[in-house]
Length: 422
Image: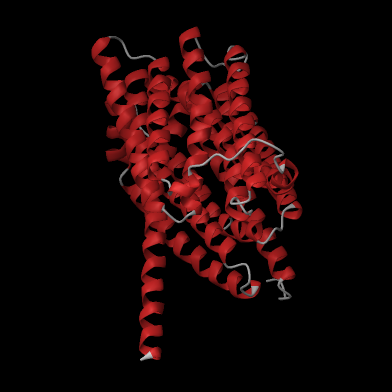
């Protein structure tokens, strides 16, 4: 009987793990759906040049969310957030990141002309409002992931999508839809999502904690490295957007961005699985590192297979995606679809090892590798595009650097495990 009970519990645990993994994948698919719908509407409403500018501004928000996810989200996953001083520090850092995001939005809006971004006063105001909300909502999502409530994150993302689309439709009925209208819709969606986060969190996770004597040093010591890693990864894509717009023009880069929307579900799923793996690694740090590397290898194979399938669908279905995203007035670039698929494949082979290294506290070396990856990617894109190559080749340049970085991180982790690097 005890043996039977043990097997039942083991099977139940396995089912629970698979459900959480499925939830993590669905989380990113829903988020990708929301991003796809919103940006497809931008492309059909404002044209490819409008899509390029919106993507650049939205990319700044995503970049800030990456910093918030690394600094606060990863810290609350790994550190003891039940300790009053740690919790106080997490709240303080969340506020600092949100205010910093608003400040960056002000700077980007003010310098929009120099960056070839047409940002009027109304658009700037909504950009500054939406950015800190976007960052705080990401922290809330990471808190739900930390308690393994991935299906609750699905609900949160659906709420954000519904609120954004409904508000955008209301704006369209009331008057003309502009770039500022889309940023206003993002702000409304993030506000609704934050309310949903609070409602879905366990009661003991809703408390903020007293803002007295926070352990800011401990959160800073861990979170800064993850914030830099997340920042550099997302900054590479943001730099690609800015370089593409500056060199090739908003319309030409808009075609590349439209192609990214088609491959985005695969990229989002990779990010979701990385968050799921990170939360699992943080809970099982007592397991042998070599065994976790082997398990990560298997996850990489699964993710690569998924990306390959998405890439085939993206290229073969190009006429369909073109009609959905850009309409009859333009068409997607097959080169851009292949380049973004290559980048997604490289990310699937790299990101899981970074999650494992982060959960084990391997920070400085991994951060150095990620910085080198980002710098080399940006330089390569600038040089290749500057020499006259199509801006659609940019994601392929990033893919090469990302794949090399993933190999370097895996090699480093294997060395820590006492295994011969391969």
